[in-house]
Image (tube, rainbow, N blue to C red):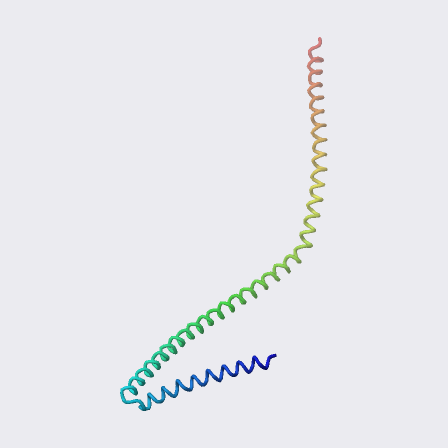
Length: 156
């Protein structure tokens, strides 16, 4: 099945090459002057014009290639910068993780101490409330005793 397709492709290539040979023979005949000096000069002008067009195409291709090479160089430098920044960020991340790992025990200890301090604060607040109640009671008793003393002092 593949052989007929290959043969057909080869036949088409053969036909294309034969056509190109005919064109080249005509161009050669014109350039060599077989059909007269005027046709030879016309063919030379056509050939020169084609060569100029090819040269122009090559020049623009060269400029495009140089532009592409510059762009590729710029892209390469950008990629190198991105890789450098990425490497720097990775190092920073590792350092931050190490610092976190080093600080985690201290953080846990501080949390435990805060809990203990809060427990102590609540106990002290309770004790302060008890003392306030006791002092309020004592003040009331002092006021009562002063009233009694004034009453006793006022007696004949």
